[in-house]
Length: 113
Image (cartoon, rainbow, N blue to C red):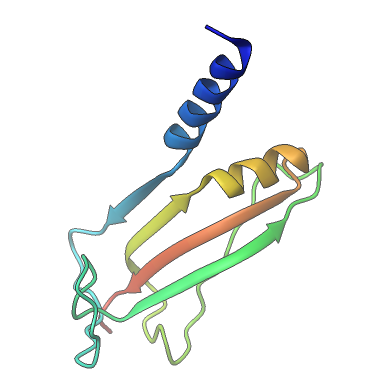
């Protein structure tokens, strides 16, 4: 096979394996309901908060913490379900900036107060 075929095969494998999502759910709590939600996915009837942003991390930092505060969207300040999604674009941004910038796509549902 030609070298271009190997490159395309490797790129497609990287693209397919880098897109995934992880969902964590608390078994002891009840999700905050949203009766006006018109979603047809896993989060049907729940008040979902979506966070889609790019965060910057210093080279000397080892971790990053995002604080969930009590506000109108999340009255209890506690999380019932959280979903983290990783995409190929986020992986490329992380690689190009040597880990200083990260693309974050998070969905979370607060616990019922």
